[in-house]
Length: 294
Image 1 (cartoon, rainbow, N blue to C red):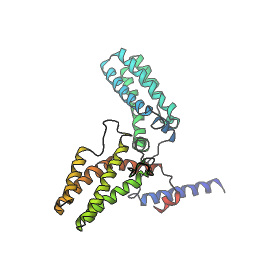
Image 2 (tube, rainbow, N blue to C red):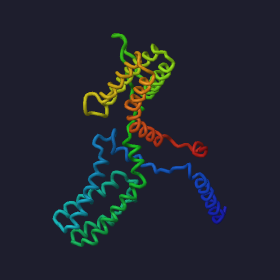
Image 3 (cartoon, rainbow, N blue to C red):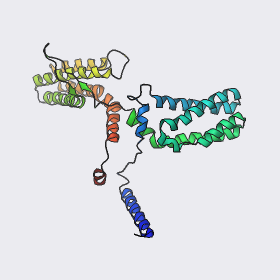
Image 4 (tube, rainbow, N blue to C red):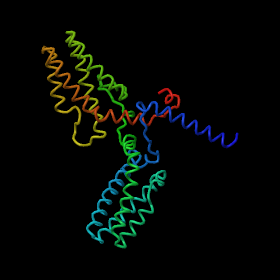
């Protein structure tokens, strides 16, 4: 095949793909996945969250350099511009895939301009360095947070309470336990509406035990305090719900169950479930047949 023909075919393929994407622009969201080499600088592979601390240092150092350029404090400017240079070049060492996104010439010029007290030129070079950071953040900050900072519940097992001293219950997968809690909440609603108070109270007892078991896993991440979940507010709502199931009105039962669903389910889901689902979606392998189907 001659080169002109080959190039024409390639251009037609690109146009075809572009046309398909444009035709489905309302249904397609494109994210850039961060390189896997970044994982070594985040938990659990790294105990100190080195990448985050490097980013925090860079932000602080850029602020200090800008301030001391404006005030003409040359002694402190030298201190902070050297720190900035060290951490800026460290990015390329930590994540080689992002080396090409850096502006090494601008960083070196910033150091030289600062030493030569060329403050206007230093300000310009600092802006170029800042722009290189912003361009990377625009592409990767959200996906990096979702990929490496969102919680991972897939490896968590929950051990049910033992009903006999000699029996050790088999652990339950976290997702299976959450599904059970959802079923128990719905059982309480169904049985209370249908006047089956005995069944509703049985589902309530299972839900109460299940929430307590769930709370035992929270301390793995939430180190503050001895009991994070269920909170005192949740326990108060649970007590009111149980009381209403013993003879309260259907309206009271519905109100307390709804309050419990917000306190014990929706509040945590708004933070953890959204982030966990996004993490799983990004971590899953993208198959061409699935992409074409969508």
